[in-house]
Length: 429
Image (tube, rainbow, N blue to C red; front, side):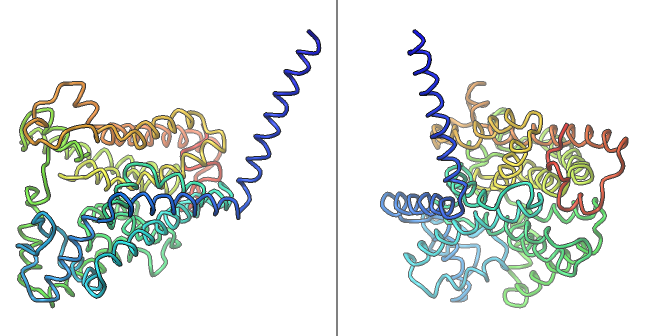
């Protein structure tokens, strides 16, 4: 019996030793980057063997081709499935270079670029959190894992620009408070895709006047450039098309992870009417308030994530691949788990259930069926919206607790607000 007990202890010791050895190996920079390269290569192989086309990228190229050849930007542009252009004219100008190379080259370049942008987003978030919060080798490891979460996976699959916009915003926010470049990235993102414009309001509410003014100036300058090239269509977009959500797609589709999408499925009609307007107004106010409180008490990563999620919730259409703000949230959660933040493991489990379960992929693409869902199916079709609302509430609650703690130990410094408190952007409580 004694020998069996000793043998059992020896096996457990060997397993622990093997696990520790594996962990030590993974933590080596070369091994970490090898894991990322392996995951990136696996995605490239799976995508280009099974379904090499990237639908949204093909539409972008068609938009650029229409501009290049003097065709109407918002009519029949020869895109797959007769899809129409939905981006501002300034974005269309940026798509013109895609027409200089074959579509297959565009697909390959977009895949590689988006894989690199995941790494850039993780690295920028780590910088905002404070580099001491996470070791350098965490960047490729987290990036490798994030390839497989639903919003990122679909962004890669469709050749979307979501990650590029995310990196623009994160790069902008790494600028020191008062720096001249502060606001440029957010302004460009707003000129390319309307939703990031809410972050200008966030800058104003957090009293970053210079950055807000720069963002407004940048967005206006970009729009004026497009107006010089296509004045009539620039005017039409910003005075008419920007308000017409019917051009974007089926609002009731489970892939639409916005409040309006959830309400459409719950009420059984595309237009939620007054109720939708009231809920949108409440979430805008509450979400931006949560972002401001989070910024002041927890630091920039939490604040901008709350503000951006607010934008996703209140946008009439937020396709699941728009939710790439799951990237900086994942980095913050890893840092919180590593530092022992209370509740971080539970939050991480909720994150994985939300973004790695692909729950709404199992619904049929049937507009009428989407308007007549059971209560269970409605809950299953709204994971990102539920997560977003919980995230806003949790951010505000944790920020309030940290603020109460800070009242006894001293105020949060300006540097901590920008780069995050030393013990974590989610707060150590």
